[in-house]
Image (cartoon, rainbow, N blue to C red):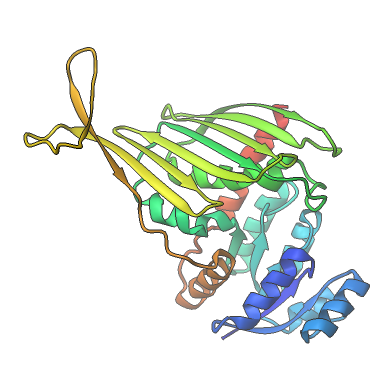
Length: 319
């Protein structure tokens, strides 16, 4: 079991603490939170060991789980890496692309592994559909959330849209060519609603919408590719694949057929991949343990996290 400590005991930090405490792949040593009142409350309520400083915690563990506000990610990661600790770091990886690249450089220099908490990679609906996503040429995503003051210290792009940016970068095997975007601040000092159009060198276009002042929650992605349309509902944990194939000689009475102006006929097939229930946060933490123990590449690398942040910053710069 890997000895792990958690930096940050806010809403998400407490979830990480609970799951790491349950995991068979980690030994939870304790946590640190600079908010003394909150830290003492968490320690008293759940019995986790509270460390007096970041350095004390890092000295006692092999893995540091960074669940602090984004502004402090770099300093926390730097301290942990320089002590030889592997790092799991919540998204976004850092405040700036320069900080993200510095984390990558440090991790390489000190020969430690790092994974970024882009948890939607572990969403069961995406897992069920991802192997069917093959060279998509148009992608549309909607990530809408009801207002919550937590997270408004950063633009909605870094709070919400970056999830979809990471998913898109994981399935489009091409470099980003151009970004157009617009964003509006409604209740926060930073944009609360944003729309971005990302164009790739291979011709793929992705249209992303994110809002944190919606009347309802939505997390849907749609992938359009040759002869197939794939819909992934990451909130409802559902996936649907619609395929078009040449019409067979022996048609079923209930077959759905489309015919174009040239007389070419295609049959429509519907498929609902099996979506297996999981705990996405536990899975991302435990796959990181596997990567450390087996000396393999983490599912979401520091490079992946830095690239998602780079594209997110391009979106923000387009406002």
